[in-house]
Amino acid sequence: MSNKKRIVFIINPISGTQKKDDIPPLIGELMDAEKYDIELRRTEYAGHAAEIARQCAAEGADVVVAVGGDGTVNEVARPLTHTETALGIIPCGSGNGLARHLRIPLDVRKAIQIINSCQIEQFDYGIINDLPFFCTCGMGFDAFISLKFAEAGKRGPITYVENVLKEGLKYKPETYEIIDDSGSARYKAFLIACANASQYGNNAYIAPGATMRDGLMDVIIMEPFDALEAPQIAADLFMKTLGNNSKIKTFRTERIHIHRQEPGAIHYDGDPIMTGTDIDVSIEHLGIRIVTNPDATEDSAQPNQVLNAFSDFFNNINNVREDIGKDIEKRGRKIQAINKVLLRKLRN
Image (cartoon, rainbow, N blue to C red; front, side):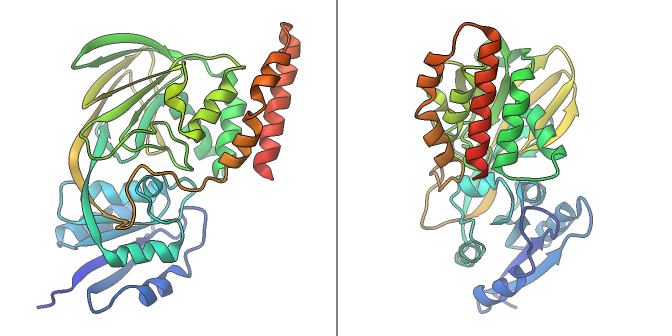
């Protein structure tokens, strides 16, 4: 009987932002054949990755590796919760939220080497209305932008920021009642996010202090803001300083119930879905095993292609604010100019 560990790579050929033709040869080159029995599986239809992962867990596979974007990672991870089979990640998506949080390299060769080291640790995951999530879930503008992003046809941080700038000032906040162990409270909010990990992806840090080991989620309530406050909130999101913004309220809890006045969208790890007026979110403590980077800890930032553009732009934002007059039409023209400059910087 073989003492080798069985590792199954699930490759989604159409997910993410890059072709995967070179990945199977790299797996053959970099994985240690004396330690591991390697199997490559390609998905053929929606939901196939979850079926393969579920079968592998039932058969006692040691590791199942998601090769794709955040959607593929979520789909593969769901059937592995509360099993002895660990999740591995080769990030090939636009956001790569879980991989970035755990500091799994975005370079494919380096990510395969992490799988080859096969260091496995246990982490928390979340559930929103019976849907597992591993990074974040949310509602309000959070989910609205996920819908827009899904409809955009193209991926990446520039598309995300374009949607935020284009739609953000038109979005109408909602009123929510939040109930947890400490009681209930009502909030008029632009968005409510529940974070198991620190970021959405693309190093957009909605919960910079979040950790996946404490049995708690970070709840972020973003209060309504005006056009002049929007750029600073966007900057804080990428600069890991959102908690310092006066429009942000945060707390940590194991579970919450949220009631809103109208049905609408929620998202789990960026995948949007329509649901009703009542939403339950909870954390499952140490409910999933994940192959981790032995040379890194979670919660550390990686290089961010958006951050440089934001940093240069927002160094001068306060001066711009002081120059904006009281005339509403003049304010609108200046805000449009600010957004155009930011988008031009991002495209460059």
